[in-house]
Structure formats: structure tokens, C-alpha cells
Image (cartoon, rainbow, N blue to C red; front, side, top):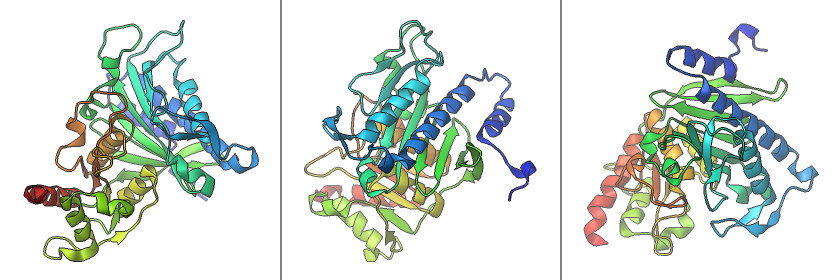
Length: 340
């Protein structure tokens, strides 16, 4: 049993960080609390999903033309309801909604926008595998009033904070703020609080795992195929072979590689040249975390955080993880460019 003096709650940690910035207003602190509350509600529902008829398809599709799961809908509504009445946001955007989400009439719009993937990896729900929530916070660009598309379509380098919650064997919230490090908090269900469990997470430059959906191998470019063969150990002069691990949920694969070291890829292919993952809801927030932890994230050649979005549901390829591993992929893709 931990001694009370050794326990650091999410609330205490954020308040301690806030005191280091005398100009802080507390609004970002409260916004992170709002997200943590939504995560607790979603986590509770996931734990009970098989008992309350919330597993399976909802009978609808989202803007991505993907079949929505019942928990997708629940998680999306939970995130919106936790944020839309607080006066801290001027608009939201969700992977599940076609357009930006305004705050309700009568609520004073705030200074932040929040973008989120409410339930990443929802295809894992029915087999009881890990899923997660990804979030991203920006300061608004417009001067006042309801948020606009301009407030949402910002490059990832403008993020104020980003993070994710993983609902696995335990529930973890991992986040970073601009200029800070990455910290992880595990939910203690006995007291209903997130407790600091992973202080200052750092990604090893070279890791032992690679995560990629190799069923798409035949549709990849020559460069991508060469890079993955390098992970197999076919390029020993430049890269030691790695072990393959692929869950099929970005949060779960990224979290493992953050903790244990490794690289995740979702490249484009002949069928989907821009890959599958969304820039605003998945790639940019994870890239923010990766760089804060000493790692890197590119679309193969370009830094993810420098990509200026042009649409809410824009997709980009993603290569993310240890800095040396990501640079290896970039080098192989550039070298292979003449062969494409």
C-alpha cells in the first residue's frame, strides 16, 4: 500500500505545474479536469459494456463512412457533454462528426478548441481488446464569439496540450503541455482518481518493436517495403531487427512503443495514398506527445507538426516513435524514391 505522502493525483500534479507559470489563468487546468472526468465515465461504461447491451454496431455510419459501434456514439456524446457547457471552449471537432461542434446557445465561448477521437480502435470493442481516447487542445485564432473553422484547422505545432486515455488492463491518461514533458496517470478505481504512475516518459531513440499492418505489404511503395524488411533484420548494417507487435488501435500500439521503445507506421498505399489515420484527431496529438518524449513523427518525410491542415478529416501517412527509427524510415524512403 502506498503511503499517502507518496501519492500524487492528477489534480495535485496539474496544480503544481500551474504554480510554475505565474501567468496561468487555470483555464487549461480545468479543461484537463473536464477531459479526465469524461475518461472516467467512458471507462466505467467500457467495463460494463458486455452487461448493458452496449457492445456491437449502432446501426449507423460516421463521417468516415465507418460503421459506428454503440460505444463510439456513447464516448462521442460524453466528450461533447463534458466540454460544451464549461465556458472554456469556443468549438470542438470530433472524428465522428462531419463539421465543427459549436458550444450551445447561452454558453459563453471560451479561449480554446478541443479536437478528439472519442474511441480509437473501436473495432476492438467486441473482442475485449484495448481502445482509447485521443485529445488535442489549441488556443483559438478568432477574437471572440463562436469558434470557426480557422480556430480548428491549425498545424500541430500550435497545440497547447495533447494526450490520450487508454482503456486496457488499467486505465491510463497520458498528456503533455507545450514545452513540457510527457506524464502518465493510472486510474485507481478504489478512489476514482488518476494517480501519477509514469513521470517524464521518454522514448528510446531505437526500440525493439515495430507496429504496422503487414497485410497491406503488397500495396505499399518499394521504399515502405524496404523499410519494413529492415525491421525484419534485412538491413543489419543500419538497423537491428525488431519484434512485430500490432494491436490495431493506435493508442495501444503507440503507448507500448512509448514505454518499451519502438516505431508505429500506417503508410499510404495504392488503395489509400494518404493512409487511414486522421491528421487532426490522431496524428497531430500523437506527434506532439512523441516529440515531447524525445521521439519523432513524420508522414514519411515531412514533420507531422508542420503540416497545415486543409480539411477537418484530412488523412496523412504516419511514421512515429523513436527518433533514430523514424529517421531510418525517412532515409530509406528518400533513397528509394528514384525506384518508385
